[in-house]
Image 1 (cartoon, helix red, strand yellow):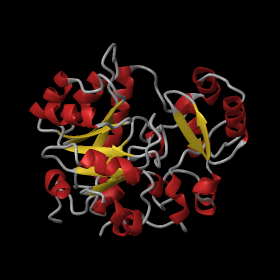
Image 2 (cartoon, helix red, strand yellow):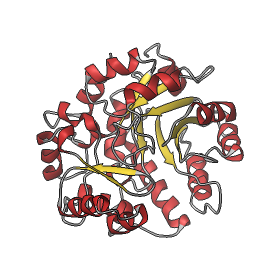
Image 3 (cartoon, helix red, strand yellow):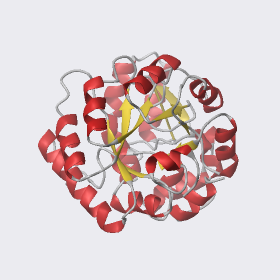
Length: 325
């Protein structure tokens, strides 16, 4: 096992954590990351399709149980599950947490959205069950970092504006946010997220004070990824300069070009509100259409700015090795 603090805490061999990626994760991808020595993480819609998706909290939790069990059949190594709790009226987290505890999952990636995202009672429940908490705030600050650490977070993720998916509200790049957060923690290690796709960017993350990397986009184009070949080819052919940035809820998104994305960018440029753009964008449905089904007329392909270093469809094991110093 690597002597990195990240590896010691998580019981893994290489300090590479795969981002949850919502619809784009499944047991095959997650197990492949864990088997390669990193930590795979099941996203909220892991393994689901439009046909198998469900709407009630209980049914959603049971679908997660199915994917957890499939993952266990493919790996004996640690893997995690994503939690996205909200401070008020959250019907989804309790049943998911129950399944995580019943299935013996030992790691969660706890995604927070700014003020009030750290729920002490939930932290206490997870810690009492022996679950390791990787805390990732979409808008990382020294203040919410210290709050999360005090509440019991074992690892903190410093997410820069270079990432894909839901972007931070502050346009502060990975190069700036990682040292800021690394200098804010008292005694927990930090993972760098945003634009990390090769050995050069991984080395930079470590030089900036990170003890490991938290990567998403680079795993989307792998052999084990469930996205269609057409999407993988678009990722390989593109670089960060091709991405289209637009305002939406909660703050920003970026995507490869497409019919829907062109409309969203036009709306933003014309002064439409974030709420108006978000309504047309379609939330995670747009991600499913664009990235899981390859339909860029009605969906989007959200990626980080580091995609210019992705030059082929490689195995997950090759990617994990590439991100390991």
